[in-house]
Image (cartoon, rainbow, N blue to C red):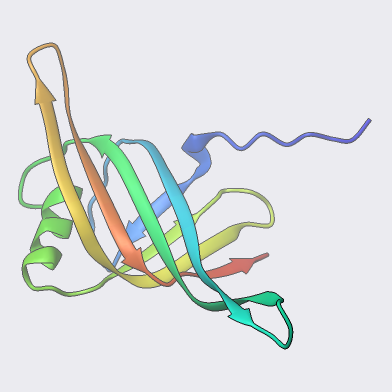
Length: 133
């Protein structure tokens, strides 16, 4: 029977630039969208061709507020339209790391009378994936 490895979300770490801030992350996602077009070839055939890709990182967590909080750091970067250096590590041995200068593309705060305030941040750009670092 093959071995099964389960990676708990708590093993993932996310770092932004050199800003010293932390946040309680609930969940997140790394998504890659590849632009594929069908080019016509001789005859009635087509062949799929990949032309570009874009990565999206979403991090959902508790709202940390304050001047040194995670959400504030991303908010400030979005106001200057500056990319943020993002590094995500999966905590495995050997570790896999995703790094890139990503643009904050969506920020939100969710709050209610009966739950903790939460924040969500989405980054867009290109990631480099390294294994065994």
